[in-house]
Image 1: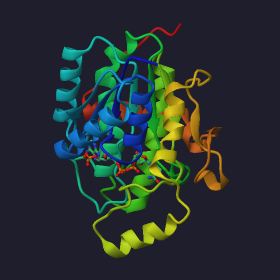
Image 2: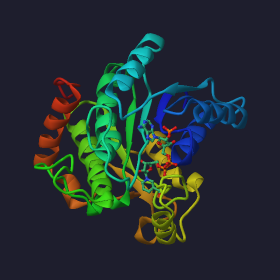
Image 3: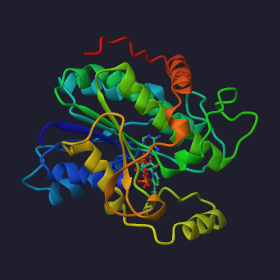
Image 4: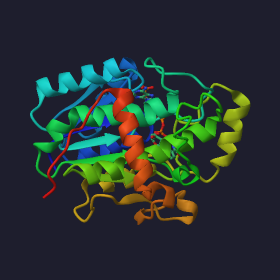
Length: 291
Ligand SMILES: NC(=O)c1ccc[n+]([C@@H]2O[C@H](COP(=O)([O-])OP(=O)(O)OC[C@H]3O[C@@H](n4cnc5c(N)ncnc54)[C@H](OP(=O)(O)O)[C@@H]3O)[C@@H](O)[C@H]2O)c1
């Protein structure tokens, strides 16, 4: 496929290999992340590895933990492009000590869910004018352990690093499915299984060792990207589907269609989370006539 894709968090890890996979298929790629040095180096590597295939690859600054940055990114995008073929909501943080984003949101929910909620809403006009456009939102097998604490969404009363991560990854699922119900877009979910990336780098040696032990048998970041690329380009993919590895425990393997956990199918929670997300981000999606 040709066209243009925005891949968040594509300076490294699974996002990088997803961007490379798309570039090799002739799609232009915008790497959207925070660090200029890493982002530009990744763009350079993709340009050389996908030479002759991708029409354009560039790094654009985006901090999903800062709504002003999300707005700047989307304004720049609308100035430069009329349409958007693919949005891959991939960037993420995991199991951090509690901190808040620039806008005061608990960081894992703020970056993983609310930042992507705002970005998708702001890029919506470009997605809607592009025939066959898709949004792929990246979740985790850990969404199955998630619970949305509507009475303490920012984990102010009770914070657990993994609890907040699982909540954010369940929020990704509820968002993607509600996006498909509320708009005419093809909104798909993907998860990479367990893959060797920088996600587990916590700055705490003991905790990092524990996470590394839990990751024995993990697959490469390149293989972890395969379900994302499949969700983005395969012609038999339908809105509302989830793709991930087909091996035991969904940890590794070839891309396959998987079931969403029951709590991810809860439409009432999805509606409530949507309303709260609109209020918190100030990004309103409006209403659409479904055909
Ligand atoms: N690896 C796994 O085993 C695994 C398992 C399940 C799900 N996942 C999911 O896969 C996705 C990718 O993770 P990964 O494993 O590839 O992790 P990674 O190697 O740490 O990559 C995450 C990327 O997100 C970017 N990022 C972080 N905070 C950001 C922010 N505020 N604004 C914009 N970009 C930001 C980082 O780039 P900068 O620091 O330059 O901004 C980084 O390139 C995540 O959604 C994660 O939850 C991963």
